[in-house]
Length: 383
Image (cartoon, rainbow, N blue to C red):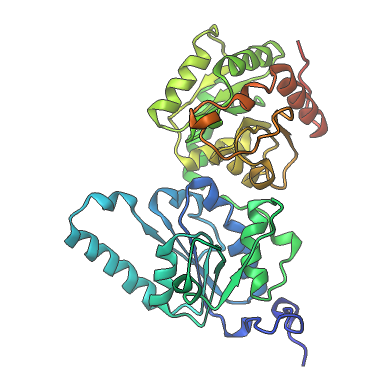
């Protein structure tokens, strides 16, 4: 008898393909920052789509919890608190023991480890699942790494989106990834949505279309020059756009926002919400926005997950890997800089990326106008 469509896999082409019918629980491990964790969301979605009744858990850093919480594709989220590094040895051992005992009690049949973090390999060895998959890292992991997993995979030398790289782990297991299941998913929740609606109403933006601008990143060498962002905001306001400016809570990011906004006169159409939103509230705000403007950052990926069109400025980081995913978008790069993407913390590791400054204000403004027009909203005029 043929297997149901959801259980078919490339057994004829892949001798060591897994038997999905033998998989009841899966643990997906992703030790990274907010945006990277969010880009792993399709892995949970695809597993749920392909294996009926499967429970898929996540193991992530605690500070990225809001990227996956409330996601209906995830049965349970287990976290590691990086702040525990400062605790006594006894306390750290107790915390680790509780986590491992909880994970062992879930009896995982499959572990999907999505980074090179050795902790994931150690957890896999302790859990001893029937199947385990991770990326092969030549020169970085030896026999210990290889023997921690039943399946290893390589990624093409040519850069491709991080979502696809994550899904390669499932392809290596013999699973056929349905194209319609590759979308991101981020649930803001009723509490965050209510808080944002109340704040929008109080600011006078309740029924007015607006654009979210997030100028900063955790890594400030990815940021567009403050003077350029100031000039862009000035032109958008002159074109009649309502704007909400956001940032992370870090002091450095908020200082950047202060530098951007200081030369601008007060305006009822310009709201500074920098450093004041939770991640869930930012997701709720993005879901209400007509457009997102920013750089390579977690909020850019959150915009993709909420279906918000995005204009993204890229410099040292790779736009092929981190571009907006499955939403209308414009990606702007300084094509004259053949050295990008370099992955460095600024030119010469000096925390300043010259390629970011080479992207012009009018170039970004035109991208905004084009995208607004293409998404059937009123385009702003260049000035």
